[in-house]
Length: 194
Image (cartoon, rainbow, N blue to C red):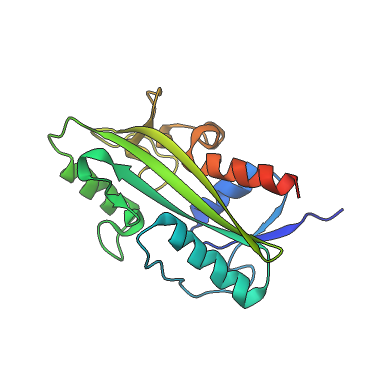
């Protein structure tokens, strides 16, 4: 029996790897490249839900394929929830993960309140209907980078009740507790009932 195909509307190879790893062969996850879509989908909105929705709707409208998209934000209490929806481009449009990390650490220099959370919202189009799933993990921003795995803010985010940053954890351990892992778990639970 062939696996059901579903498109993950992202150009982020790290996210794709995480989700494929998490699904472990339950579904064939197609990338935008796999379906021949090479455009950037704008994320102009002020909420994670709207940004996720615009990506999944673009692919569904264009290809009529079951698909899902996510948007993720890091919310830091001391920065009034920033970088939030701007997490991926916090240090500018063509910035690297390291540029974002450096900017955040600089802005928190001398700040004792380092409470933060990661949030992921997934928009799923399945058989023409849309569904949303959210995952969240609370934690704090460390004072310096630690670890080499993961991507984005992983080297400076330590989840609550853990001494390790996401970048110091194995992908399996991270997926068990991460924002994206929690959102994907809800997505999978839903898909398995269909």
